Length: 106
Image 1 (cartoon, rainbow, N blue to C red):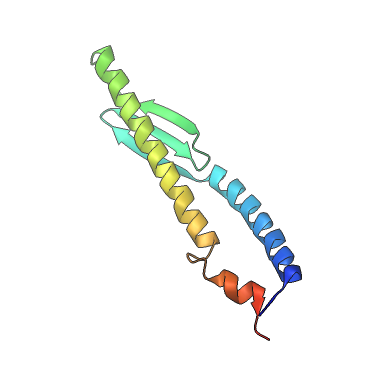
Image 2 (image 1 turned 60 degrees about the vertical axis):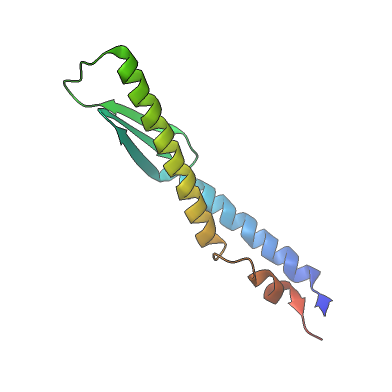
């Protein structure tokens, strides 16, 4: 078997371009989590993009803070899951493709 360095270089250039596109796409995608009266949205860069409270919410401050914390953590978890799903799609879900792309049989 011969290792084809030229094909490897071309592949990594394409992968870098795909990862750049994926990063931009993830910034534009959002997920949402709700905890009690609190709703939090986060993007694929794991940035909180919005926090909202349902109208008429007049409970004590400690409960409100706990709800915000739970909603933020849930939104960030969903953002990480989104990143994992998108990366899996971008990589074809299997890394076994490396052998067929870069190693030529004599």
